[in-house]
Image (cartoon, rainbow, N blue to C red):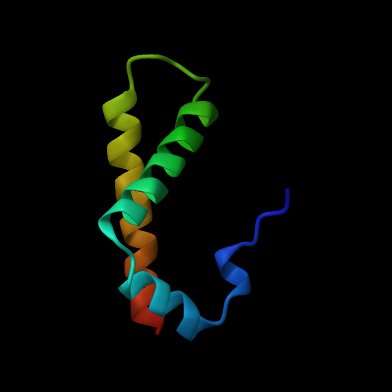
Length: 70
């Protein structure tokens, strides 16, 4: 399966997506990033909250940067 990067989308489209993202979509993005962090950190148990909070910070910073560029 091939995944398309957000970087392939025009600036206006990325900003539009960021502005219309639902809470469920935001949580799905955070969940995906938290899973990536969990795997990157060697799948160590007991760091769920740390991974979630870091993922939340990363995703929200990325969305904020997208909105500023729009």
